[in-house]
Amino acid sequence: MPQVGDSVIREKLAACLRSDPKTLPSMYFYDHRGSELYEEITKLEEYYPPKIEIPLLRSTARKLKQELKDCDLVELGSGDCSKISVFLDEIPEEIRQTIVYYPVDVCKDSIEKSACNLQNKYPEMGIHGITADFLEHIEKIPGKRKRFFCFFGSTIGNFTEARAMEFMADLGKAMNENDRLLLGVDMVKDIDIIEKAYNDRQGITAEFNKNILKVTNDHLGTDFDPEEFEHVAFFNREHSRIEMHLKAKDDLEVASPILDEKIIFKKGETIHTENSHKYTVEGIKRMAGAAGLSVENIFSDDKKWFSLVEMVK
Ligand code: AVI
Image 1 (spheres, rainbow, N blue to C red):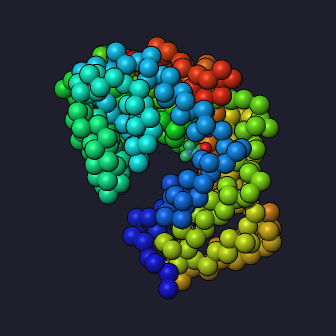
Image 2 (image 1 turned 60 degrees about the vertical axis):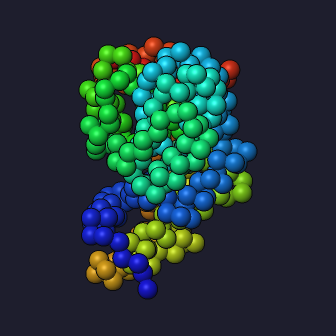
């Protein structure tokens, strides 16, 4: 018996599958199984971003520690707070006790649990979780003291170009003169390295990609069989992004009693499931400039594969 999601989600998914070309929004990767698979991806040899971002968070925290004094540290999309924890480990306790940390995430349970864990780890620091979709409610973020915004993980790379620009512009508008933003971005590099990161030998990324069909089945009551689709991931040079697709192995029809319609696929037709943009220094500066921000520092690893970009208004 399919689990029927709410009508807004249903309409959104249905519209994506009716569109030409067909799409599914990448946010639907992350049900329980999808989150487990993503966790596995982060440990894969080929998937380089976390292996570079984590040490970079440490070295950058050591460089920025003075800027964190007396500030409200706002992490957008804080998840399990594991990244900020790496960052805060490098901040001396006497500075930490002047910081108030605001994790912002849509998931109330995850915020409460991770804020509690973090409070046990750093009893000297104020912590106030904010349950909000920061893409919609940036005004919910307090603004009395100077703020240090963080958005790690190159999650911005998964937004459409227009959405990323809109998000940056909203942030640019919300930021005051003393505020700072530290943005994690995955950089353009040898295409073979990028493509291998999304086509791992164990097939975990393929399973992660196909899992979106099970999530769709849960919401729409469709009978997608993930085995009838092939995982495809390639670098699109024009848009400077990895694209993930699911390609129909044959002509097929997918039924949905909830939608009361069939979804028809021709052999080779794809569902576009994700974009993961890769950035250049020029691209980052352009994006910052268009949002009314300027780039103060770019902290990168030796190979310049990943960057933490510090921006000010
Ligand atoms: C969450 N996000 C930054 C990942 C990325 O690399 O774009 C999602 C991902 N998709 C496939 N592998 C990882």
